[in-house]
Image (cartoon, rainbow, N blue to C red; front, side):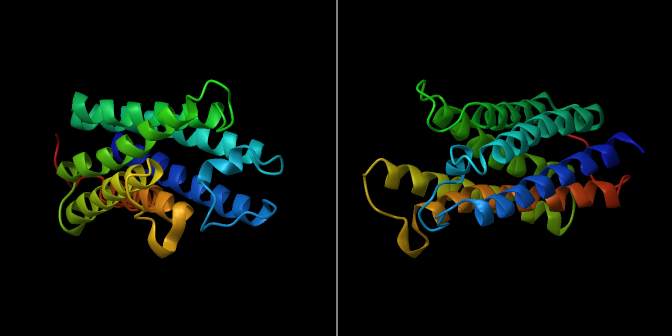
Length: 197
């Protein structure tokens, strides 16, 4: 297996394992409502805290590993930096729960939100065809909802709409996760295709 295919496998598995953990966690957590609850609430609910922490920390580590493996092909330090920062954000948010007295969970989560979507946009130069547009669109949707979420959380204006706080946050996270699955599949399915950075 070459570096391109290996990176694709790692990133695909990252997405699958974290999406699965989210679905299982949401089903297990008592009184958890997607409309209202933040994703990180799963990290402070006793029934789901360990699942969430392990899955999100693993997602961060896998993103860094996948980024390094892919770097051996594209040699773009900028793109590698985005993968590393996104991974650090996810690992920090997984290891430090939302209710930690330091309050740094939110900073790590912001890093993850920002840089996972940023890496989707930046990775568009590594792919051809429809996947190029999918990468840009997914990252742009995530960043747009990050802005919406910030304005709403800060009390500047309520832009949550009918999807609520929880739905708004998922519109930051899900496009990037679904992009990772598609990007990973693209890398595995076309190991000789695409461009170098």
